[in-house]
Length: 180
Image 1 (cartoon, rainbow, N blue to C red):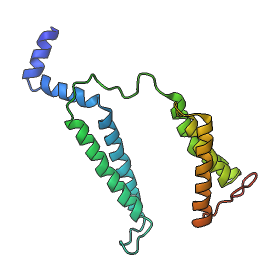
Image 2 (image 1 turned 30 degrees about the vertical axis):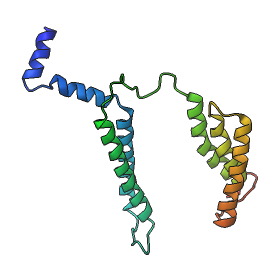
Image 3 (image 1 turned 180 degrees about the vertical axis):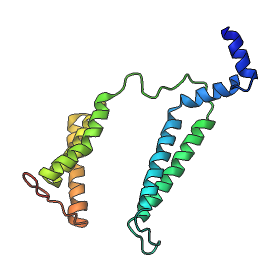
Image 4 (image 1 turned 90 degrees about the vertical axis):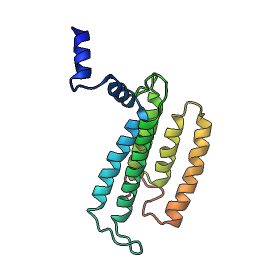
């Protein structure tokens, strides 16, 4: 009965085995999903950016950059998805998640911006920037805590110099209990 069903699907307007195979290969490609996700995010950003005044190239409004970057993200996502769709590799199916997911790395990377928000609100730019760099650097499986410490110190000094001194971002360097 199963064999008869397979034969009838191939002949009576169902999906042919070749198109099913191509669809299965496409579904198993991570790059295709990454490109699709980039297209969706880019579309959201571009549409949201148009709700603000766009302005002109000489006198840009607040919606110009989000709209332009959203469109670029859509184009980049389309390019990635097309390359993934056209790529013919004889590798076994790729899984969306790796066999041994690096949970520690992912947690450290996600914790970085959250720590910046929390520490920036309550303790200032220096501790927030330091934690935002130090914690994700600890997630690197090949990195050491000394390397993370050096990286965080250098990037904190650079960030403070750029954003506080040069760009004059109105955020206190050090504060206690919420200086914003």
